[in-house]
Length: 269
Image 1 (cartoon, helix red, strand yellow):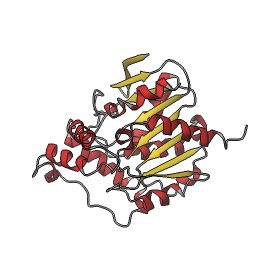
Image 2 (tube, helix red, strand yellow):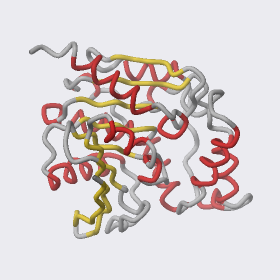
Image 3 (cartoon, helix red, strand yellow):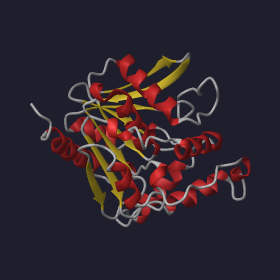
């Protein structure tokens, strides 16, 4: 079963797709500037192995209307927004799967509501307290020279790992070009400014954090340092993968099922 609909959150329409009609729910969160199309292969694959995959476009992304205040520069807003989408859909203790800013949002959701989540899988994400240096703030002139399309295209070409065939890399880069630079840069600013370092130890739901060995943005050591702030966390290196495992790994759904088994096998009955 595949269903697509709009919800009204904060007076704006939010686009949500659901794949599968039964099984544990998995709430999927995309990366900065992108949208739920990143899960176009993963979500049906999750449904095929018994999960109910829920994919939402964040405010201002894809088919969702923008937030009332314009592009969002605070990832905490996204975390709260995602929890309200989950409540609106009546999802009972879903898993949360997120990549890059989606992983950071998943961590924030777990800080806020660990008891209402079955667990989280956060990939290719850090708290910037773990980074050796903070990048400069994104500014208006970043929208040109080269064009944002070129910047996104060539950046995506350079952000896929060794395991990804060239034709797949080309497809990922081309798909990434369909973005709004206002939203992309706001997301980047929000990621840099999010500070969960002192809150991560409050996460109590089962958590797995994964890092790509080839990630050009967030070094695996920094991802690991962030993960180690979470009690009982599982950390996994994805060999030959870079910043977009949800698009780079054709078998991500199977990895997710393995991760869930790992997490649930250690949860007391």
